[in-house]
Amino acid sequence: MGKTGKGTGLQIHHDIRNEKFLLRDVLPLRAAKAVPLAEPLPAIGPVEFKPRTRRHRQYTYFDQGSTPKCTGYGSATLMAAANPYNKPPFSADEWYDRNVAFDRAHGRHYDGGATVVAALEVGRQAGLYSEYRWAYTIRTMQEAILHAPMVAGVLWYDAMYKRDTEGICGVPADHEKCESGHFIVIRGYDHKRDLWRCPNTWGDGDYLINGDLMFRLAREGGEFAQTTELKVKRK
Image 1 (tube, rainbow, N blue to C red):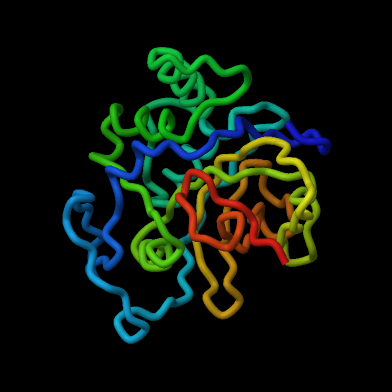
Image 2: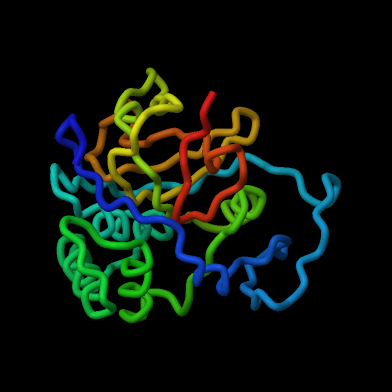
């Protein structure tokens, strides 16, 4: 949890096993198709794909309060972003409890929080979706967001609690220590400003624009990132 009393979660680093389950770098125009990593990925040229602005509707906002239950409340947010008629078989609190149980059953005994993988596995095992895949690059994310909302685990810094009037999060300094991690849903992208729109789980109306945070995302050093370890782009 951060200094503001708002709930975040665990700081989890990249799990190389996720690289076996990637989205293709070139997605079909009408439907995202998951393919094995072993299949060669075609070269990407600027003419083949141009990022576009896309915003999915957010029908419900959730508030985890000062708890570390972002994986449970974020999962409920994803269901609401994907379709207003989605009715998860359990509450956000129970989803979080199931995430913790999943982690512990697989040897991950964390204090205060759960992993993104646990949240996605709980949803898959409940039959809410048949599979999930990882977007390995920002380029893949820019096309994937055209089809559906996504989730991400973000490294969270104290500077990110600060935001401007549009809800754009502050940028951490190079020396700033990572405070924790946070599970968020990504429901839109503004390609002209390179901003990702994320409905946060701190209640409707927080951050001045209906609970949405705005990020510029990159891996430390400017490299592209897994959706499980995104950072705010430094100035």
